[in-house]
Amino acid sequence: MIKPIKAAGFGGLFRTEVDRMVDAGRMVAEFLEMVKVDSVSGKERDMADLVKARLKDMGLDPVEDGAGNKINSSAGNIIARLPGTGKAGPPVMVCAHLDTVEPGRGIKPVVEEGIIRSSGDTILGGDDKAGIAIILEVLRMIRENRIDHPGVEVVFTVFEEGGLLGAKNLDPGMLEARLGYVLDSGGPPGTIITSAPTQDRISVAVRGKSAHAGICPENGVNAIEIAARAIAGLRMGRIDHETTVNIGVITGGKATNIVPDSVFVQGETRSLDRAKKELQTRLIVEKFNQAASASGAGVDVRVENLYREYSIGEDREVVRLAVEAAEKLGIVPRLESTGGGSDANVFNEMGIPTVVLGIAMQKVHTTEEFIRIGDMVTCCRYLLEIIKAAGEKKQP
Ligand SMILES: [Zn+2]
Figure 1 (cartoon, protein in one colour):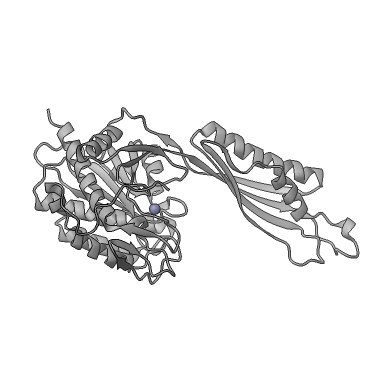
Figure 2 (cartoon, helix red, strand yellow; figure 1 turned 180 degrees about the horizontal axis):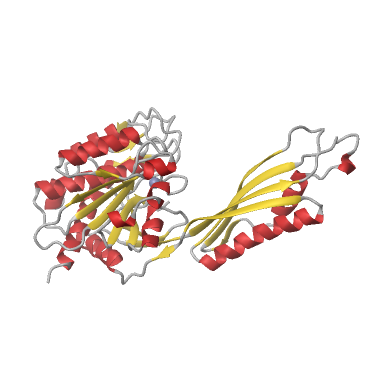
C-alpha cells in the first residue's frame, strides 16, 4: 500500500476555486448511505437501483445491460452518459464497481476526525463505493458549475471482485469512450496504475486409490502425498519483480484410517509479462503430472486465464492527461504497476486504453478498512481536472 500524501481534512482550508465546488458534506452523506446498502458480489440489485436513481436525478438516462443474467447476478452493469459541451470529443469513461467482498453485510460506518471506517466487524466497502461517490460528486460539480467537458461515460460494473465478471460481460459496443479511468486502487490521489498483470487460475484434481490405512496401505495410492510432493517442488511467492505464484486452496481426505484417493488443489500465477506467467503455469502443471505419474495416480488439470496484462506508456494520452491534471493541482503524479487485476484489464483488452486511479482507500478487504474524507475531496478535484483536460485536448 502506498502512503497517502497529507490529507486536507474534512472542512479544511479551501485552496482553490475547485475546492469550493466539491460539496464534501453531500458526498460523504451519499457515501455513508451507499456503504449501508449491502451489495456483495452477485447481490448488487439495491446498489444498482440506488445509483440509477441518483443518475436520473441528475438528468442522465442510465441503462442497465444484460450481464446480470449471464453471470447470475441480481443486477447488470449500469452505463450512463453525461453529454459533452460544445467542443465535445469522445467522452471520457469513468468506472467503479458496485459490488463488495465479504464480510460486507450490515455495514455501520463510523466517522471520526475526518476518517470513515467500519464499526470493526465488516469491511467499510470504500472499495469501491468511494469511487462511486467521487464519480457522482464530479458529475454534479460539472453540472452545477457548467464546466466545459468532452462528455463523461459512467460505467458501474457488477461482480468485479473475484473475477471481473461484470466488465467481462459488458458489450464494448455500448461504449463510446476512447480512454478510461477506473477508480479502484489504493494509493494517494495522483497514483496512476499504468500496468497490471495477467493471471491464470490452475485447478488440479489428483486421483489416487483408497485403501485401509492400517490393514493394507500398500493397496492404496495416497493423493495427499502426491499433491504434497508436487507442491514441495514449486517455487512460490514472489518469483521476480513482476511475477508471483501461489497455491491457495487444498482440500481432500476423509479420515486418518483411509489412504486418501483424491485431493483438490487450486493455485494462481501472475505476471506483468505474459511469457513469465505461462512458464510458471507450465511448471505447476508439470510438477503435478510428474508426481502423479511416478506414483501411478491420475491427475486432471484445468488452466483458466482470468485476465490479460496491460502496460500503457507514459506518452499515451490517457496517462498524459492524468499526469498533467495532477501537476496542475500540485499533486505528485505517481506512475505505478500493480499485482492486482481490475476492470481496467478488461477495458484495455477491449481496446480502450484505461488506467486505474488511486483513491486513497486503505486496508481494503479487511475489517480495518478506512478512507480519509480529505483524500476523497482531493480525488474529486483531481478527476474533474482530468475530465477538463481531456476536453481541452479536443479543441482545434
Ligand atoms: Zn475494488
